[in-house]
Length: 169
Image (cartoon, rainbow, N blue to C red; front, side, top):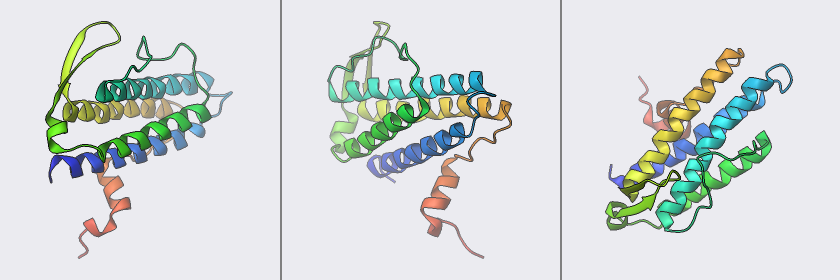
C-alpha cells in the first residue's frame, strides 16, 4: 500500500478511535469521577491542541497556540466537537496531497521556541502516533474508574469498517 492510501486508512482509524474514546469518557460520572474525567479531558485536549498545531505547520499558517494545551478545560461536548472537526480537516487535507508534497520537508517552530523540520508525511505520522499514545493514557484513566476502555486497535477498526478483510473458514 502506498503512503496516501495508508495515511487515509490511518486517519479514518484515528477519527474512529477518537470517537470511541470520547463515547467512553462520557460514561464517567461527572461527580463520582470528577478528577479522572477532568484529567482525561485534559489529556485528549492536549492531543487535540497538538493536532491543530501540526495542522498549522502542514499548511504554513499560524496556529495561535503558545503551549501544547489550553489554559481552560473545555467541556466534553466542546472537546468532542473540536476533535471531530479536526479529524474531518485531516481527512480532507489528505485529498490535497501528492507524493511530492508528502515528501516535502517543512521547517516549523515548536511552541517552546525550538526549531524543527519534518516532511508532511512525518508530521502526519506524528499526529496519528501522538494521539494513539494519549488515547491510551486516557483509557488508563477510564480503567481506574472501572470503565472499560474502548477496543480501539487498528485491527478492530478494520474488521468493523471493512468486514471483507476477515477471512471466513
